[in-house]
Length: 195
Image 1 (cartoon, rainbow, N blue to C red):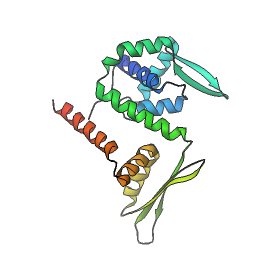
Image 2 (tube, rainbow, N blue to C red):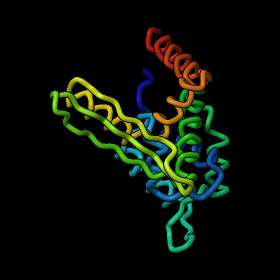
Image 3 (tube, rainbow, N blue to C red):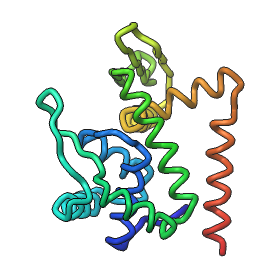
């Protein structure tokens, strides 16, 4: 597994790099989700570095329909372009892919839900769903032996519904490129750890 970015300068470059890849203004919560979702940066470091980038003029705030949005400035884009090679390629590639998946799911206006229900035989059912303006596009119920299993799966779905959805699509459609990419990256991470 690749370790977290610890140096403030690397974290700032990482944030600017992702904002440059996104190429559009984004709300703070979504930006936070994008930066921390792969666990290369922890929550507190993100908050600290984001604030410093904003204060330095590398990130600017705008308003759209009363919502605060943030985007990279030309100064921030130059810094990201100049220094992005400081971040190892595996981190850049994986985080960009994850960011674009998250944005794709959110752009649909997807609403998700997940619940755990005790069954009469002592087992638990974990049910998750996702819908957008066209209606429900995911409905899945699993019966599990323990509540602990069900709660863990609920937690994973709540944290990454778009990842779960795309993985299900990949497996059921037979298009395993998405999963193969994840396995290749995990193997590369393991190889880096072994060095």
